[in-house]
Image (cartoon, rainbow, N blue to C red; front, side):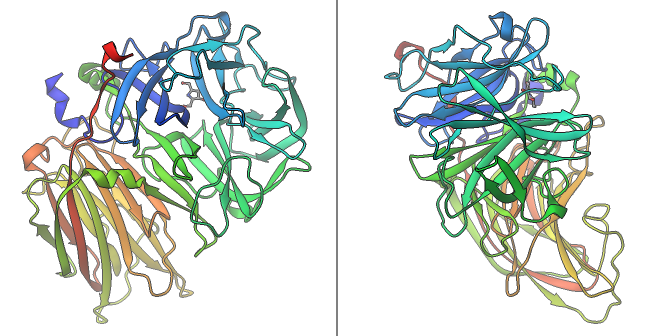
Amino acid sequence: NAMFSWQRTAFHFQPEHNWMNDPDGPLFYKGWYHLFYQYNPDSAVWGNITWGHAVSTDMIHWLYLPLAMVPDRWYDANGVWTGSATILPNGEIMILYTGSTNDSVQVQNLAYPANLSDPLLLDWIKYEGNPVLTPPSGIGSTDFRDPTTAWIGPDGKWRITIGSKINTTGISMVYTTTDFINYELHDGVLHEVPGTGMWECVDFYPVSINGTKGVETSVNDGVKHVLKASLDDTKLDHYAIGTYFIENETWVPDDPTIDVGIGLRYDYGRYYASKTFYDQNKERRILWGWINETDTATDDLEKGWSSLQTIPRTVLFDSKTGTNLLQWPVEEIEDLRLNSTEFTDVLVEAGTTVPLDIGTATQLDILVDFEIELLGTEESVNGSSGCGDGAADRSTFGPFGILALADETLSEFTPVYFRVTNSTDGDVTTYFCADELRSSRAPEVFKQVYGGEVPVLDGETYSARVLVDHSIVESYAQGGRTVISSRVYPTEAIYGAARLFLFNNATGVNVKATLKIWQLNSAFIHPFPLDQI
Ligand code: DQQ
């Protein structure tokens, strides 16, 4: 539908038509990155869930393949739901996925490639003995879903974890198996957090404490373990960093005050149901996440599609802070960079905006560094905490940042900004935020101020990387310590009318901005040539 064509993104993965949700079973195999995804082949709203399938050699350019799995058995008649892939040392691939049965019971099923010599992994066999797991006693029949990638212990047994809840306590259970067919439920849980509700799409993986590479899922030396749950109650992806004790199958957070579901988030924007995989090709761990819509279902039906995936991100432990992960767009996206413009020490005085003359601004990769200069004359005004009430909410040290997807007259814009706050006891906390309140003049779009705390260490400037892609502003602060994906629907700041500005709404500081901005090419995302399949 041409009516909404400007919302179509240029380098984020999205199907040609219809509805998409969670990423499923990502893996690298025989030269191809595979992405499966929850997909409705019939409509732009959720339903009839199948596994869509696409392949890429760089995770930026994609070729759509035929559906990998459809709901054609009693044990997945109500949907081929989310699952994960495990590549065994002998080269076999096991996929475990949740089926919603003909009675809407959640069960776990096994599938594997029909032909391991096919790099495209086109055909999948559902194991004849499915389901391989049904809800254990004490677990609700609709509270048992989204098995993880398996990891192997020194005893030669594979482990998986599956999220659930008991009353309002979110839990993750551990099963062991040697053949992916027969499983034993481990007594006790990997972890639980009261009050967090149903844990969907649990992810569990090691991160190297000192290394700059990702580690394979079974590695358990020199690592911490990340546990992530997608909270069904709030639709937010929360992670925590801790230690995995394989001897009793438990995981303990480093800091219980920022446990799973009550502390850090991967992304403070519109983001859910994420999943990582270990990329043995480039020895890195890659994180995929689903960006859903904030317009109406009517709009989605009219435009004929719904949702995107984030840019795949590498994930590392931040050894400088020791408290968080670092997420960063895969390096392959840099191959889309076209011409660049640099700006050095652009002065943005308190209460002003500065246009950046880069021409059109719908497909950008922006690196920006801010330094602040105290004016020293003003009284400290700190107003509200955190991100405040948006970019218009002025305080002494912020907000300052950029206005993405802005039109010339500033009738629409999406601010991405830093807001530095100091408490009466002298503690300084910095927030990284995005404000969608004036992102669109469309009336029925849901708009929010998003953000989270970002650690800024002594001697560091305030730095961000922002990827602008028509209707997405995906922003990374301080090398990826805090990330925000905004889903926005400009009506004026589109195509050649989109512009980029700097702004400084602080009352007590001037800022100096240094930027490098690339125009980004569009990725090639098309059906695989059918005669070559
Ligand atoms: N989406 C899938 C479920 C999962 C949920 C169904 C999370 O397996 O729990 O489409 O978005």
